[in-house]
Amino acid sequence: MQNKIQTLAIIGVGLIGGSLSLALKAKGAVGRVIGVGRSTANLQQALQLGVIDAVATLEEAARADIIFVATPVAQMPQVFAALAPNLGATSIITDGGSTKQDVIAAARLALGSRFNQFVAAHPIAGTEKTGASAAFATLYEQRKIVICAEAESDSNAVERIKAMWQVTGAHLHCMSAAEHDDIFAAVSHLPHLLAFALVDMLAGMPRADQYFNYAASGFRDFTRIAAGSPEMWRDISAANRVALRQQLQHFRKRLDGFDAWLAAAGPEDIEAIDHVYTRAASARRAWQRHIEHGEPMPLFNNGGGQEE
Image (cartoon, rainbow, N blue to C red):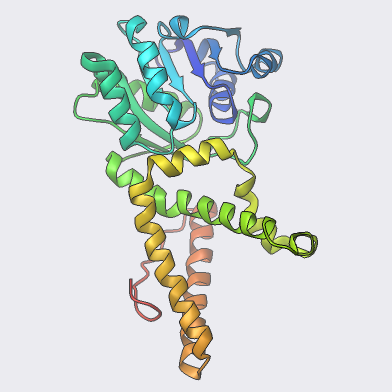
């Protein structure tokens, strides 16, 4: 990294923030990492594991070279407001939130004329584990990082945040906040909602013990993400509710289509189900080759099945 980060402040020292710290430390791209958080036990564990070098207050964090806010998105407005009065003249605030329009609006409101020192970002990486002990240095290697710079964003600040993420081995992508929220409602927020909904549905049924006793790899793979942080995903769902509801409506229409086909169960209905299964399997395999081998994704039309 051309300009080494002298002091990095991590607000919310969990998987996302902790892994950024460890990645930068591994590359010698940061001098000192300070951590801020609600849990004293988690911060002490972060110290013991070398994820952070010192525990700090929000006032101290506000003067760091780069301030990475890795809290649940619902907490970010309060964090920005607390940072604003003490923000260093050259300090840069960035975030790791899974929604962007609400986070940007909160930063603009709290920072006022110093909003140009904020660069919205979203690292597309994670596991279902939480806390400082879940962090690891290679989390971001070959993963995507989305940067959602605004017109007011200081160009030097944007470049510095891009350089920071490049050090971790991530690939940078830039888009508007609105485009980001639409995309991730479809490919991240909706899948989490569905996984939580299925597990909760089964847990509330009279024969729940039998259902879970016989659940195997298919259930495991589909519902892995339901083991994530309920607080974080509650906040994400609420923050991106407009785009998430739109995607949920599309999904509900597709489910209604399956219900109609299953109810009729005629040859044409079975053929329609087969068409959707075949296209879905093809798309899933193509996506996996794209992720693992960099093959381009083919274009899929909306022919057959249910119109969207």
